[in-house]
Image (tube, rainbow over all chains, first blue to last red; front, side):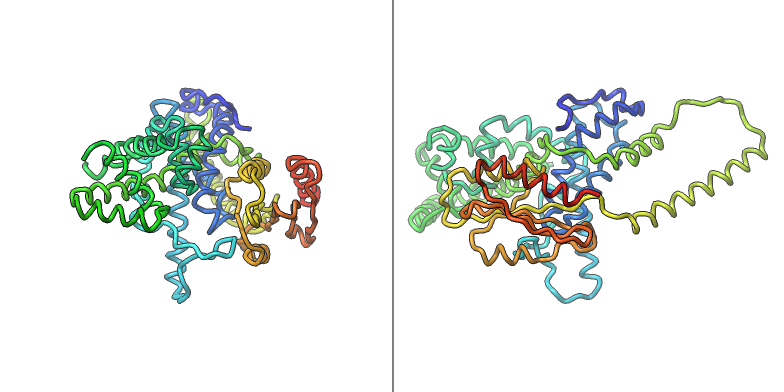
Length: 195
Length: 237
C-alpha cells in the first residue's frame, strides 16, 4: 500500500531525501496506473520504465508546484504524456520502416485495437500543466455518485436500470446524474474550445 | 420544450450515443431532431461531451489508484535524480588551485563518460527480476453473479488495472498462446475460468515452464493466494 498522507512539499522542494522516498511511494500507484492505461495493450513491458521516468521528470518540476494537491495530477499528466509520446514514437517507427502491415497493434488478447494516440483526443493535445489542472478539477467536481455513474455508463456500458440497481438510486435519477456529470466535465474540459 | 421533453431528449441522446438504443428509441430521437432542428446542436455537443468523458474518466480513475508497491530498484535511480537536481549540502567553499581544478574536471568528465556508458550498456545485459503478470477471465453464459467482485480481487491481488475478459474459449486460447512483448520481460498468464471454477497459470520463467491449475475449492480469495504463492515460488531469483 502507498502512504495515505501526501508528502511535505517544502521538504521536497529542498531535495530532502526522506521526503522524496515518501513521495515516490505515495505517487507510484497513480503514475503506474496512468502509464498502464495507455501502454498495457501495446507496450506492456514499458509501463514500469515510463512510470519511473515520469517521477524523474516530476523531480525536475517540483519547484514550480505551489500546493501539494497539485503533485499527483502533475505526475499523472507527465505519465500520460510520456506514454502517448512513446506510443507515437513506436508507431511512427513502424511507419518509417516501410512496413506495409496495419498500424493497428495486436493486443494481448489477440484482438486488433486501433492505433493509439489518435489525433483529436482532447487530452493528448493539452499541455502537461493544463492537463494536470483539469484532472485536479475533474476529481474535485465528480463527487460520488457523479463520477461513478458516468464511469458505469461510459466506461462499463451499463444501462440505466443496471446503474440504478448498482448504485441504489432511482432509474429516473440516472439521467439526472449523467447530465450533471457531463455538464461538470464540459465546464472543465470545454473551456479550451472557447479560449 | 418542457422539462419532461428535455429529459426524454437527453435520455434518448445518451442511449443513442452509447449504442444502447433500440430501433424505436432511435426513431423517436430522429423524429425529435426533425421536429426541432435546434436540438441537433445540443446532440452534437453531447457527443463531444461523451468523448471527453471516455477520455478523461479512465485517467481520473487511474490517478486515484492506491495499490501498487514502489519497486525497490527504482529508489536509487530516483534519489540520484534528486541529488542531481537539488545538489548536495554545501561543502567547503574554499576555492581549489587552478591545476587541481583542471585535474578534477578531467576526473569528473571521465567519471561522467563512464557513467553514461554504464547506463547505456548495463540495461542490455540486465536480467529481468520478475515476470510481467497478465490476467484474463472466461465467463460462459453469465451464470455467476459476483463477477465484478472477482475481477476486483484479481486486480487487487496482482495490482493491475487490466483483466482481459473472454466469453468464448477459442478467443481465450488465442490469447493464451499469443506471444507477449518479446523484447522485454517474460510473461506469466493467469486465467480465471469462472464457469469451471478454476484458475490456470501459464508461462515461462528462466527457461522453466509454468503450467498449473488451481480449483476454486473454498473461496476465490484463498485460491488466488495459493496462485500468488505458486507464482512467487516459481519465479523467485
